[in-house]
Length: 230
Image (tube, rainbow, N blue to C red):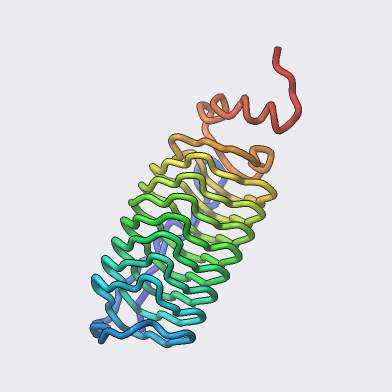
């Protein structure tokens, strides 16, 4: 079983926003994955997947517990309704990875290069996404609680209809985000640079932004609120 120490940043920040709790994982000694393809509803416990080519494989409903995935290829890998718990993913890459309706709890995702990842309807709790670049991330109707995006680039992420609670963006580029119908509670956007929204600026209630970001968002807010500026 992973020994987990959750970071001390549980309190209220100076802005009155509650800080997201980060996972701090100490994996137990891992056994190398013996090869072979992923299996639907498979059970993977205490395994290390290193430089594995998992492209196109079907692990729908699988459970990953105390696992490390390092340098793995995830192109079109099917992992809907999977459970990824107390695990670390480093340097994974792929286009079209399907994690719809999955659960990620106490997970670190570092230096990923992903495109078109499907996480709609997923549940993310105590997740750190650090470094790397993710294009067209689909988080529609997902639930995010205690999630930190740090030092990463998000291009056109879709948070439509999602619920975000205690979510922070730290030194993170947020380009073309869609917040349509999203619900935000204690979301700290001050570390997002740039902060560019395509839709949903009217859903920023429950978020904290800087004065400079407010000025940058003024044209979008005016459109969303039907304000004419002449």
